[in-house]
Image (cartoon, rainbow, N blue to C red; front, side, top):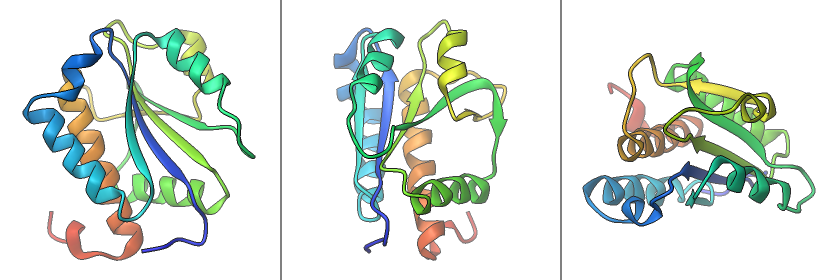
Length: 157
């Protein structure tokens, strides 16, 4: 399916041990959901060794619009799947070229990173390991894009 407005969606994770993020059952599952989501929008996953590395990478992105940053943070806003889809749809339709959804470092995001984010997003008060957070985020991205496309995946789930 083609959208009138093209936007690239990136899952970024702060992972000092980047190799773990690329193998195992959770990596396979996250990759599967991102591949499904790529039917609707270009999607990719990245690992950065530190928060500073992620922020430096963001600063170096050159495009017509600056990347929009959404941080996963336990102190963030909880959204329903429909509200998350609407958020992605608004960004896509407003001409955003790059949306970065980032999973933070083990000790949480710095105040500077939180201030830079367009949204702090929480999956609830529970703490998830990075690998599982990646799967949940990838699935929610896929779910959001199917909601926007009117695909029946979301119905009854």
